[in-house]
Image (cartoon, rainbow, N blue to C red; front, side, top):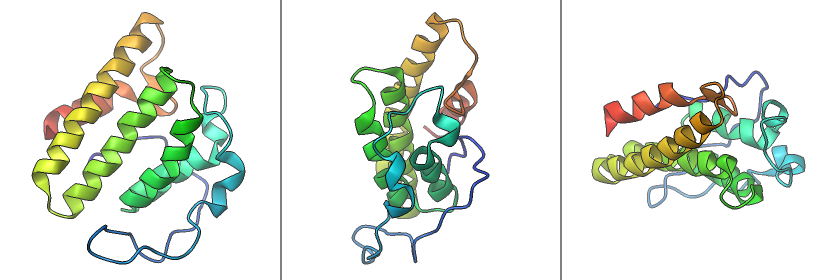
Length: 154
């Protein structure tokens, strides 16, 4: 599993169990309720460190709740402007969560394919960021470090 993203200092609730499609039942609790107030906020470089839904995704991911992380990040992704660099990065991290889910289900071929997709998206983020002559960190994600991790597993 790829390890990445900002350190989440806030404590969020964890679902009863991690959902594995085709293997277990979906938890019945409302996954989005702890962060519902931030789901409609557009993610930006100015607010990522206080954007609860964005951070909750990393919290879930680190605890092995990959399907749930994807479910939290998707509405955040949908709020980003089309073709924005924020949207691209969220697409990449959603694919990383999907790959980790497939990996946890021992579906190696699917996991590798999703990691390749994430790597290509991440490379596009890096190219666009380098054009702006800014640091390697974007929305709390160390881009070059994540790229190296993905290269090793693909």
